Image (cartoon, helix red, strand yellow):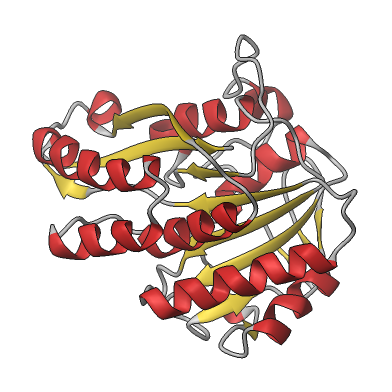
Length: 265
């Protein structure tokens, strides 16, 4: 199956030259196990996303977990096979890896419905294609943020990784924006609470903080799952590479969305 690039030319550019402008050649990339990257239209969050991908060495396989904004499909939807279209060429889905996740976690379902109109993973694809044109992907759309589901999905991912070829360099990508439609001051206060848990590599703590402090972070489940997976793979630290909000583009600081980029190694 070919998953078409639904948002090319609107949420992000269509030309290689315009896409390349969002990367930062002055940053020295590091070896990483995972990252947290925003997924808004690039006019708002593209610089943060570009800095994240500039800060990490390219991988051969990207395990991508994003929120299900549409509510379509199963609660844990793993794209089964085929390709994802990008303006720079298609990215192949690693069908064997996708099937492995569902084998280790029956709650995860091979599904395309949840992905059909979801933007949270599509906006990552041009950066991945530009970083490594031959990379493969495993897109996961997550609609269940319960601690048990995040833990079981993380276990399934790491088990599948350990069964895969050890020569394949893999990167976990958590797609998430931070606080939504609050003042810039409130966003900073609440997002700092969430970021503290992320930088402490505390996935369960993140879920608890987001719920307890009423933080409108849309991808806490994907981030928590990614953290749990990364720890199992030996992660020792998380580094904040950038934080901003939409007000710096729109001029409206009374109702912003926060964006953070984090590298986990």
